[in-house]
Figure 1 (spheres, one colour):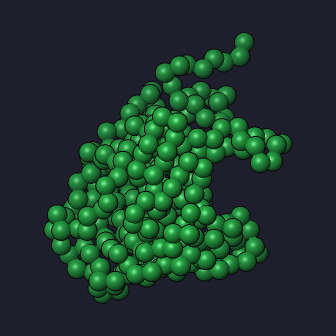
Figure 2 (cartoon, rainbow, N blue to C red):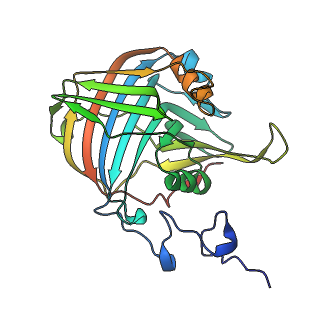
Length: 276
């Protein structure tokens, strides 16, 4: 007799061993409170960007909204509950957009790509939620006086970095205000086997903007920031070169804001929803 799927449990491949484990489901169907964990360091900078260049990166149903910017966010997390206290690092690229579906109109930020340095959050985020996640190496940030450097590489080839200078501590209330947002938008696409150009599934998901458990411990603003994507070869980045080189061709203007935030608390993203 073959196994059956329980309607109240989450599954992903391989399904043969029972319900899967991850951020939204632990041993014995455990849920994680995410009140004190994880301990997060977020380093982020937003730059003016060329609207025509950004429009070429938008999936169907999306349009740019003011302001025309590109946001680079490096995250360094430790003490993650669902990883039994381990941590992982992230590097995401997003831009402000509006999604106009058949029923939903949502104003948020489209996550163009999110690099992570661990397979487990990549798999759970891609399959469960529809995040555009891929792998790269993300070493800890380098602090030099009031400056910090974040780097991303693959197999030793550094393809991106973000440099914040003139960091100074400010109260959390004095951090730069973000434009109003309903949350982070994702274009969930899974290819159909042996059918080039055809999708098994294809739709938009939303990570709502509310993060009620986050507590800011320390906040800093930077006087300036600069970002760099290295135009690379296929031999250097055989599976990422199309992503990195597309980003390297974007014309970035002035830095609008640049911040560093230490915080704790989060959510398991079980509020993720499909847009129609």
